[in-house]
Image (cartoon, rainbow, N blue to C red):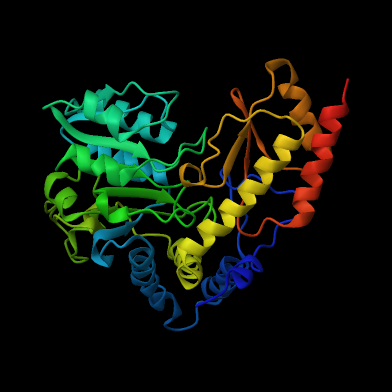
Length: 371
């Protein structure tokens, strides 16, 4: 086991970075994986390229450790959008989801409906985009085959109660986009049937890393439409095109990027070593400090103040005519953030230090004193 301080020491980014919900700068551990594998790929010593195939099993074990899904029910995907697209194209029936979900979710459902005519998006009415078990209970119907939800809402930071959602939907499929929660939210992932996630945010594994984890129920009900030859489990299957098998590997289209798998595995192993609960607590503490700082300068928030309902995301919502002024103050003081139509999103991590908070304070002072 590692300590949270040891975990935080692996953050290499410059002070002022508060945009982990957009991109998590690579950790020292992931950086080391890149360097080591770059040497392997460039020199290609006898037998080394073949040994890279072991990164697939390593990645699946690491995903299993963090999520609780069996390793054989996990497959590498280059990003969340591809994983969700493949899921939606494999579904049949109504899919209940909020129109305010991240576009990775909504686009996958609509594109599948337009192309396959087998799945039908059913738009959930929500309270400002927050998906709750109660809303789903009221709007679910007999034709609903699946419910899709983001574990963490990208605009508000609200953490969905996926355990509660599971209880109200029965044996329908539960599809979860976990990109903004995996690694920092200690969620009951196995209650979901599909967990799709990228590794480029909180996991700090970089772009081109992702996963798709499937329950036994999902493997039984999903029909892999986008499935390539690696998914049949037989590399010698020339001169024929067998049907995909009912297993997670059926969702492979081509051979994975082994270095990307190594990056994702390293990031997940680092999370597992310290424990998600410890990381979640550290992130919650820093988010609390950020909220206190915003309160000192009377900057309104539209994200939750309840620690159990947020995952390191704090949305500042100044008056509309002062939004640009706040964005400029953050920029001028070297604070990285995401400006949205609804406010400015700040996102902390376990490695967010006092120097970053001091830079944020200076930006708030400039904003508060500007005419």
